[in-house]
Amino acid sequence: MQAEDYKYMYELEDHFWWFAGMRTIAGALLDQYCSANCNRRILDAGCGTGSNLLWLQRYAGDGEIYGIDLNFDALQMSRQRGPKRLVQASVTDLPFADSSFDLMTSFDVLVQLPTSGADEHAMREMYRVLKPGGIAFVRAAALEWLRSGHDEALGSQKRYRLSELSSRLEHHGLVVLRATYANSLLLPAAAFRRLILKKFGLADSGSDVKPLPRWLGPLNTTMRAILQVEAGWLKTTRFNLPAGVSAICVVRKPEH
Image (cartoon, rainbow, N blue to C red):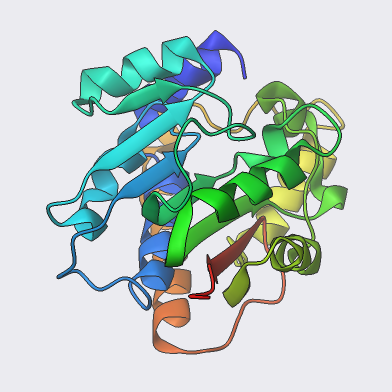
């Protein structure tokens, strides 16, 4: 990611439809496995500019929340939001002892690891630092055929099939509790924008995560509402979505 992308992220994380809507989906899934009346030690592995660190407080109780990121500027922006337990480090080599955390999150980080096999290293580290019985929430960009200039701008190295993501996590000893695609209702629109409009130069070829023109302001509310519909579906049913822009797995480290 470029410096401009982190700047946009810092400015948009609290209210932009994608960030806000995907947090609602994350909550709908995590609430089923993480009750609110519990103190937890939490790690956001790849915390970016920090908005999710504040959101994760809902699961921490009186526990501590840590954030790590490899980008120094992103960590500085996180500090401006208030969190102090921040470390500059890679998700492939976490600077924490074994069995340190009750809950761990990975929001669109695995797809950005640049070296071959790095995502496997990150999954092994995830298993190592989770306490027995600990929960991890893993989200990744989905469906390789959606690759576009958006991925190139953000430095995304790959996009996962849901079956691939879940099987890799299982291979490293984690038990998959829930596996679903997300941002599904907007998949046709995303495909149209990235594969047709951008291809023919009818839309900005860079990242999609940037402020909307003022005249498109109401679209932010509409698209956020669409993701809230998905969140409601995932929270109230056990059915998983069959396709989407993101792949999500909620996993647990076995007790023994």
